[in-house]
Amino acid sequence: MDEKVLMKGTDALSEAAVQAGCRCYFGYPITPQNEIPEYMSRRMEEVGGVFLQGESEIASINMVLGAAATGARAMTSSSSPGISLKQEGLSFMAALELPAVIVNINRGGPGLGNIAPSQGDYYQATRGGGHGDYRMPVYAPASVQELYDITMQTFDVADKYRTPVMILGDGMTGQIVEPIIAHEYIRPAEDLPPKDYILDGAQGRPSRIIKSLILDVREMEEHNWKLKRKYDLMKQELPQWEEFMTDDAKMTIIAYGTAARIAKGAVKRARSQGLKVGLLRPITLWPFPDEAIISVAKKSKIFLVFEMSTGQMIDDVRLAVEGRVPCEFYGRPGGIVPAPQELARIIERYWLQKEL
Amino acid sequence: MKTIYTRPKCLKPAPFHYCPGCGHSIIHRLMCELIDEMDLQGRIIGIPPAGCAVLAYNYFDIDICESAHGRGCAIATGMKRARPDKIIFTYQGDGDMAAIGTAETLHAANRGEKITSIFVNNAVYGMTGGQMAPTTMLGQKTSTSPYGRRPDVEGYPLKITDLIGTLPGAAYVTRTSVATPAKILATKKAIRKAFEVQMAGLGYSLVEVLSPCPTNWKVSPKDSFIYLEEKMEKEYPLGVMKDITTKKKDS
Ligand SMILES: Cc1ncc(C[n+]2csc(CCOP(=O)(O)OP(=O)(O)O)c2C)c(N)n1
Ligand code: SF4
Ligand SMILES: [Mg+2]
Image 1: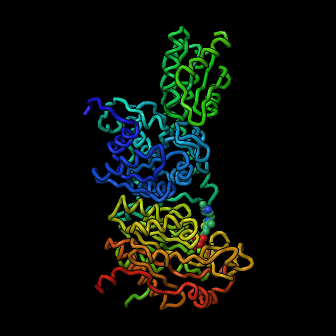
Image 2: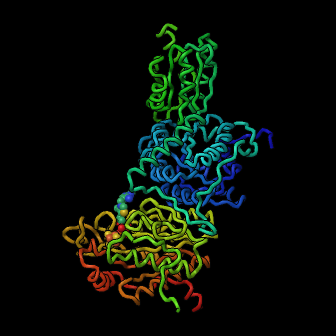
Image 3: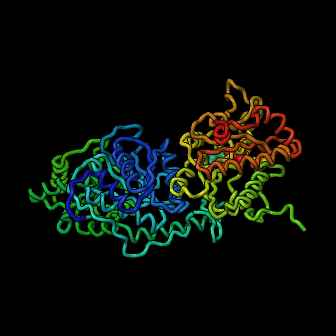
């Protein structure tokens, strides 16, 4: 099966989920991600899984919660306004420690906004989004192959840490068609923990309770610390990033997802003009690859953060950098997808300004 | 000596936190008796609400999953679709079922989800201190309808069970009460039937149980049963709204 096939982003994501054993999909239509529920409605039937179009995103995420509570690998997908509605469910799933994969194909906003590619949901994705003291792993793939691989990986991450996991893309990530190796799902090297929490009827074992209500404040504090310890472990084990020509770079661009694709093009242009520019691309947005940022900050004279928003990830870059290098920002919100040339001109401007 | 009354096996030996005279205690006990009698403990999953019954897992010795306020029927749907061999029920108050969870409830019923809802109607938000519920009756005073519910301001009591009775996906829909021992027994019979309908895969089953909340009605436990019969049962007449099993017999 390891031959190259042409695949569209949304198809790659959907098929990877099926290959990884996702047998329950619940969602509500919203552009630009309708290809995912459409693919799943076809495919789940073939593999004997469950596809159900919920009456809302609130219902869909709660269906995911229910399926996950019985031990199924479950997924939902949506786009920005719909992801806002899922936040209640995400907070509950984080509290109940139930695994699932949530896809956000980010569109322009706030409000209804538009359906063009945007990175305006970074804060919502990486700050929990829902209420309460929780975190959630967030992956931002930048190519169809990566979308395929990471989708498989997210189901393992969800099961390993018993947590909802988000895949954050945009209309571009979903629509691009690229050749990929659509390999089979490979079980992770280390065994995933047994699902000894699931509800399937108290047969030959004591009854089980899945709950988040903890009225005793001391017990609640301990639950919060327990979650925190889990998040600390994720911070050690999960960060993923890509570096491109950072070794000798005087200026490093920090960008993720679609913005990173544009940035790579801009870096190549800058390089062809002799400017020593590199790219650091966070693949996990939470946990943020702090260590990688710090190590690149030691080599670079300046960071240029590029986002398709008015500037959200830049906060995380600055937190990691702790003033080691100046962090400049260039952003195009609202659904604008600038060409690499545009970013290359910005790079050149900073290069001259800072006399690199 | 023959035992004629004992604690059901799946009712945990924990004192109820419910107020004296509260209907939740009666309904919990009935359900536990049924789970024993029907031998369901090993394959039943319950979904209590946000509401006074949120702590139901302290009493039911069965697998239980908490729900966010109103989302019970969506969670039940996810569970049942993932594990069609299990018996799934939601246990919901009127606010949970007929205000914040109306969409989840109606659509689960309309899809004919093979789940059962036990809908405890006490015409108030018990847990949060007796605020107006969708089922609060005209003229009824609550902490957020201090002048009594007025149709032109607060609108009308919502009869969600009657609505669900009109949906093709609903297989068994009925309204009962716990006002008298005979009505309590009828409630038990109705819940049994609702589970049987689910197990036969016929569709959505719903038992609305009119239930006293003496604390927020501000009447004594004893008087609350009179209030239940004289006020609640008048606004919400008891009876079967839908039963596809009898229709089948007819034809
Ligand atoms: C999203 C959300 N909104 C509000 C609440 C607060 N709340 C908890 S229970 C409840 C209403 C309970 O009334 P009902 O459903 O009638 O159940 P009862 O307590 O009367 O049995 C409310 C408003 C909540 N938990 N979650
Ligand atoms: S407030 Fe009402 S519904 Fe809640 S436990 Fe007390 S009597 Fe029962
Ligand atoms: Mg109530």
